[in-house]
Image 1 (cartoon, rainbow, N blue to C red):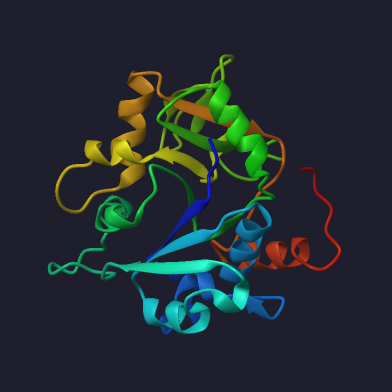
Image 2 (image 1 turned 90 degrees about the horizontal axis):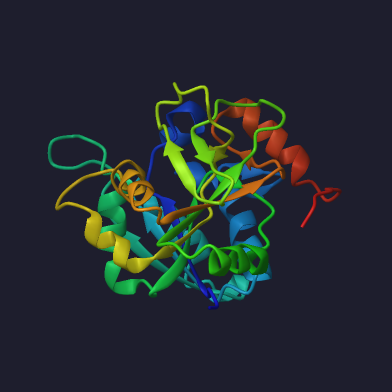
Length: 244
């Protein structure tokens, strides 16, 4: 199986990055002089991805204006827009955004968060998925530097046996960083209306042993807050060393 399509969740606000996100979408935060999202696009292109679907919301028009159809970046880019807030003033979540983009999705695709960078090797990820057949593969950082709280347990067979979004369970061995390989059929598990994809789908797949976990010691970087942006800038500077 070859993955040639990536989907990026990019509809949230990024309140911890204010004042930048007062009038701009989070993934457009500048990192070494260019939008963080551009690093993700470059990473995907390097890994043989041909098409990217960006799921926009908050100031999504600014993302579309900058990236256009992707021709300037050597990759095909499409968009699926879901408003940031619903008619009740509540934030539209990842499950609804994915359902709204369903007609654009391949049978198997790579799903990313818009605020995490990890030195992806898609060939290794796909090989692992093929050897641990499941409906979803999630990439899990082993958190060897204890930089955050764990929320995932990958067992000795390579499958996720616990997922604790609240991060209260202490018997876990990593944190999910996105970079999912997804079988499109799992979207049938989502209810109608607004919902969080991870909170609904992942627990159901764990019960069926259909959620595999790629456990990695390679640190990930994010733009979750100003302090993390500075660490990400340092990592993504021209001199960077990592294991692929």
